[in-house]
Length: 383
Image 1: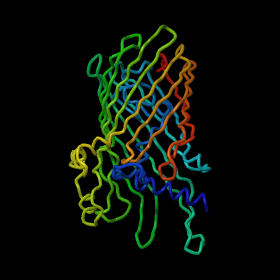
Image 2 (image 1 turned 180 degrees about the vertical axis):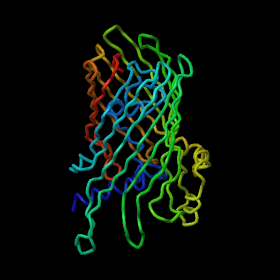
Image 3 (image 1 turned 135 degrees about the vertical axis):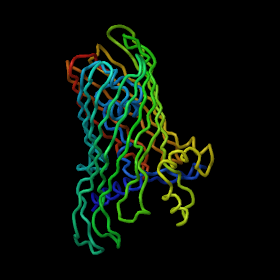
């Protein structure tokens, strides 16, 4: 029974985005911005996961599709492939919920590259029962996203990336409490920019900007008025790398993110209907000025992360980071650490997220390892 309850809690977290409880010591009203398919906001690769989820301006690798596609033309290798595995809720003794992902790229020439990726999220198996505890049915909630992208250098320092994404989400099925649920789907696009300011030795300042998950709402019923926003997002990031000698280098990076999703206001039926009825494109622009608390609340909706990465002989990497979200907007706060090992064309990464929060504020990845394999084809130094 405990396993079912925890899985249903995780399912509700996905349906509603992020569920939190008010901090008694906080004077800020709780007003969390939520969306459907929040698994698209989870960093799947272990390298970024070890650095507090930064990745917009870090050195490119086979996982660039997940954080900034525009970095790919500056990859040292001709092509690359990544495989990642993220256990979910392991700190709560649940063993069948996970996210798996794969990503790859191929450079057509020194100016352009094509990329593709897959993210798959499984919530295991959930058995539904009636009020007497008798089994009714068993269901396996699952979601996935398939991406294809193209990136190209605009100059020797700048590049642009474009991606299209198909999203499928099946969290419930059949008749529940008089409502017929079905799987939802949507199509979205990404637009990303990257400035590569590092010199030939790898030292210098890089920065980037991303617009991700720009797409249609998603529906889980046949009611056209019950569609939910997907997590459209604006991201800005920078990174500086210091090369000490031919054996060692150190990178510091920072990212900020802002959901381009309307901020909830009044909880009345009329206000909720008005919230759901906003146009997709107009909602992106309104999201910068629709918070009930004004600009102060808008700024509280910005998440920030910082990270550091040290490489020794382009073979051993040590990483650490921190992620911050305002208490009134979800209260996710956590430290991360990790390491990487690269030998010839194969790289192994892992990340660990320290326990943070309690109850509904507890991060699903608390005390959990993330694992990743990276394959580089055509030579090139480690990133």
